[in-house]
Structures are given as structure tokens and as C-alpha cells.
Amino acid sequence: MIKKLAVNIDLHVHTSFSGDSSVTPKLLIEKLNAHPLITGIALTDHDTMRGYDVIHKLAEPYLGIVIIPGIEVTTLQGHLIILGINEKPRRPLTVWEAFDYGKSIGGVVVIPHPYRASSGICDFAKSVTADAIEVINPNASEHENHRALKLSKDLGLPGTAGSDCHNPNQMWKAFTEIDANLKIDDILKAIKDGKIRPRKLG
Image 1: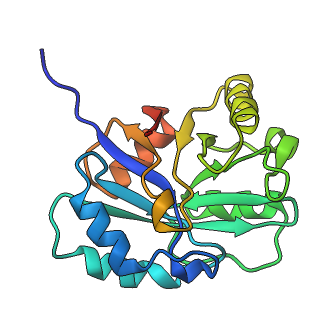
Image 2: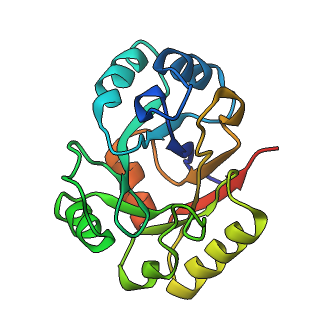
Image 3: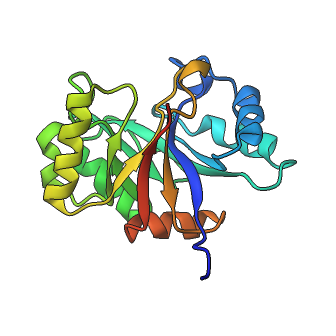
């Protein structure tokens, strides 16, 4: 039997570039390189792309890890993650404008923690055609994650998982198993195709 090729990616990571995170780029790369299971991250700092070049450069000496460019956009209705993005969208945006922007640049749109009271887009998720729903977020309650899972099933969308880390103790608590190699384009395509499985650690 041929073993299926898969990578484990934490699809929701914040660094000190977010402003509300104490995870430095250097610590992130060192911990990622040393992790026995997780081989990549999606950098999803809040409303900024400033950290990507720094973190990508720090990762270059290490083989076998991947850094996916992304952003967690604060819209007027709540947060939206866009992966595979090279430039942040203008602000303020409605969730529909952010979605349209993500699609126009060929990005992958993920709805994070949809039912978190402070920043989820809640049932507005039903009015956009996202690529995936985050169904495991360790910073969300069990009830919020359960509702997110039900939403993904109702909408027929794949479920992702990410640590949503803002401090070192939160790193690597969730990840997404993806049927792809370590190439960014292949990972993004696999997410769109639903060839993913959300996982939780600990």
C-alpha cells in the first residue's frame, strides 16, 4: 500500500507583529523546526503582512518547514482569514468586501472561530462562499467549536484547525492535516478541495 502524502500545518498563528501576541518570529521558527509533528504554519497576524518577510527569511535555513502567507482581517462584521495573500486589503471592510478581495487575488478564505462573541462573524458566514470553516480553535469554548463544526457540515465546507496562539504556551495546540506536499500552492489547493482533517493536541 502506498502511504498517503500529508503535512501538518497550524493554520492560525499570531506573532508580535499582531500587537497582541508575545510570540516573537525567532521563537516561532525555532519551535516550529523542533516540533516532531507540525511542519508548517499559516501566518495570520491581525490586519498586517509586515511579519511575513521577516519570518520567511528566518525559516530559509531550515529544511522541511513551510510558512504560508496570510492575514486575519478585522471586518465590520468580525474576523476573516485569507491565506495565500501578498498584500493586506484596505480597511475598513465589510465581510463581503473582504471575501471578494480574497477571492479576487486567488486566496483561500477561512472563517475563524465563527461563533466567538467578540470577533466571530456568526451567521453572516452563511452569506459568503468561503473555502473552509475553522472548527477547532483552542481559544474558543467547546460550545463555540461545536457550533462551528455544525456550520461547516450545514454549508458542506471542510473544517480547519489552528492554535490561534498569542503566547508561547498556546502554540501547537491544534493543527490541520493536509493531503499535500510542502509547496504552498499544493497546500492551498488541498484546502480548497477539502483534503484536510482538523486535529487537536493535548
